[in-house]
Image (cartoon, rainbow, N blue to C red; front, side):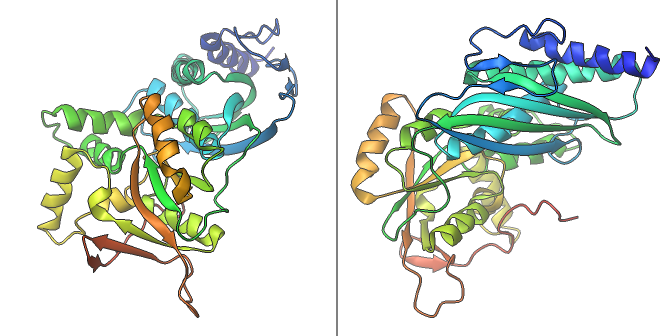
Length: 352
């Protein structure tokens, strides 16, 4: 066996260890229901539950783009990479079941590469255990930078999508706005200021976002459409509106923002920035935005509250004006006054 191959297998073994898995023994982690064959073979063999639809999603997290190993730990990066995918499953109302992980590994000293890969795995394993999903396979390859590509699989009998929203549906938000964007600003500061409680929570929201999996499952029977907020409220709401053929109206006073986010936005507004820039366009919240028929709003909020999940009605869907060229138009209301949209609506994955 060449030294290169030995390095590859050593890294794979180190990555599998935090999950309680082995390349050789086909051992399954505790509670790995539905897994017939897992890591160690060319393909996983899975058995979905009877009467459920299989839901699949994939996302890549790249060092310097979605995480930064100069400012965060490998454990944080692994957690976040899996959270990005589980958030998509939440928007479908799905129960997370399994995931596969492909690692791209830069040219590093063998010990450093193995330690970083195992750090990714520890973070993923923590979230996987909390979410009830199991690693069932993956791949390792050489690349210029670290990247983590995950394919996550879930199941549900009542899948949600971005389509299905109707005029009059209320927009219900589960999660907070602006915290992750503020956390990124704080992490990038060269001089690290002493952080208050809300600011520390913002940093945590950036490093270890919590997907709203349970909220999505509760909403599956009651909501008409859903999307997770990864690229910013305005941009993602625009996607939902476009698929549902609606416009939207948002009540700015109803947006859930921490005191730290409010303070940062107020200070930025004195320099000419939009007064809700972080909340509307920040991105990476992995909050859950639901379009809910008016008759179901109280029931859904009560069911969420019983599981100590906070939710806020932040607006509603509306009928596009006749001959409108922008069916996904969004209007912002500050009390009874319409205010302009910020120049930047959200994150562009290909922007330089």
